[in-house]
Length: 299
Image 1 (tube, rainbow, N blue to C red):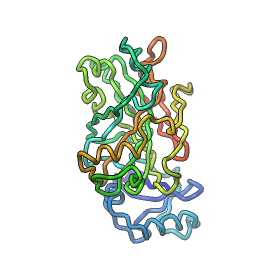
Image 2 (cartoon, rainbow, N blue to C red):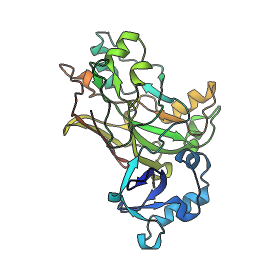
Image 3 (cartoon, rainbow, N blue to C red):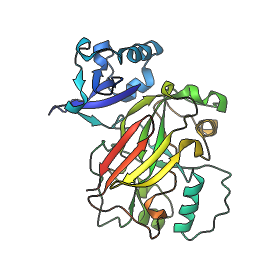
């Protein structure tokens, strides 16, 4: 099931909806008596019975749903426009990406990755699907893309065993961890270079956790101007969701609504020979099997 945040026409009011099974219609949650104010509220408070009601309703005809609107008549927003906290990210969580990252920095790589690399990404506001990625020409000379599977937690997680990790997941979405490589390298850490305004495209919606077997094994691809750049499967993650949620929750409480971006595979611009970074007008399409496509253009 796919849940989304959207607007209709010229109105700026954000609405919450569920996508019909044929993905042609959006049914507002309010039509089912669900008066949630934001997707964050949905993530943290949606009951099992409400989830079942929505899942059942996706097969209904639009004329039977009050407020149903065709997807071509809406503007799809990032599913969680303003995350409550910084997004937790994993670095070099696919082996081939670890290799290309070391090559770009002229560092040796032993082929071992004994511990996960965590960092945070400041997101004041997520970039919507089809919205332009700012390029910051006076600040950034090496703008890069990173297609990633993001997981969203539905309840507080503390001391979670790997076996129970799946019970804390509300759903999944696509995140493009846009990165300024020159800023990353200059400051010897990743926070600033990955946190510029507009560096977090997200969407196009959230797919609920029950839509996939756990752990999800989904094909992930990135196209830039139609050229295939990244092509991997989330089963190739070095540290999977069970490990990530369990390890982090051993030392910190992961609050309901926490977003964890699980890392990107090889094929980013810095890994090409020579490195090929994004420029104005480039179209980046991040696709994950069973979720959808997140498309943005560099301004």
